Length: 102
Image (tube, rainbow, N blue to C red):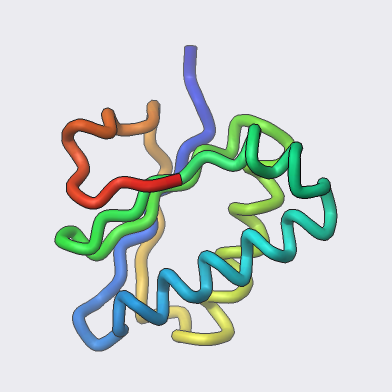
């Protein structure tokens, strides 16, 4: 079964701590839309500082909202050329991603 999963990879000129702060801000926005409990249950993501990547599972309504808010924020904050996004078939295994959370 195909899933809606997106990997955002950031260039070296973007501080990854700033990317994580933007993800946190995106999560606050999603909680405002869907509520804290639902967001905690349905917002799935993985961050990988070593690969400078964020992976968002957009297979739920909450996940789609997180994906939309996050891409909007990073485009405005870092610019179109600061990152690339690709669609994946599945969420990577947590054991293969260093520093996974979410």
